[in-house]
Image (cartoon, rainbow, N blue to C red; front, side):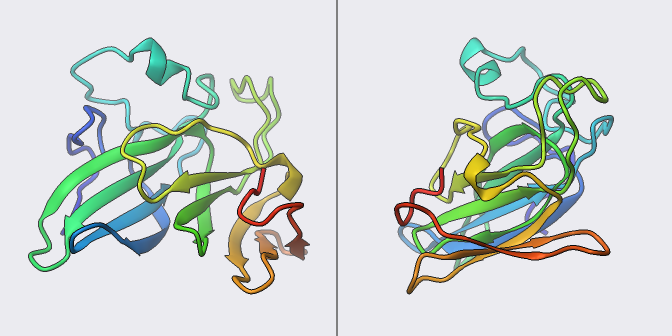
Amino acid sequence: VLSRVGDAMHDGFSVPGLADGMHAFPGEAGRTVLVRNHELHPFSEQTAFRSMKRSLRDSELARIYDPGAGRGAVTNVVADTASGRVEGQYLTLAGTLRNCSGGATPWGSWISCEEIVTRAGEDGAVRDHGYNFEVPAAARSLVEPRPLEAMGRFFHEAVAVDARTGAVYQTEDRADGLLYRFLPAERQRLA
């Protein structure tokens, strides 16, 4: 067991619940970085903010995509590969919704997929949802929560990046879901 819901992380947040899609990246000096989604709904109580012993700093508040309803998250867990000992756990994306699956990129980042299309004004949301977000495996704090709008807004499930062409293939989590191909104007710049 590397991590348990509710445990204190190294940045003062709590480990959120409902872990879903994840990927293990090679880290520095024999480390492994596990980047994982947390598929939390608008009213979930298993957030990274429960049981906190301090208030959020302004710099942290500015990096929460939707403080109104967003409970979904991404966490990065750094472990010593040989011993399996966790050396750090960090909240790297916050304020999103239903971060279901996603996919790793060849350049060392994780694409986290929102599996919901809540609009601003619904369920307490102050921003639209249904986007992908990119989180570097090397992140050790909240990243700028930039929705990858060019990749579309729908019930995202997973992504796969073709390292040869740079094309990104996306699946949709619906009974009539489609397979989408996204061709970025510039490789490795999905925004």
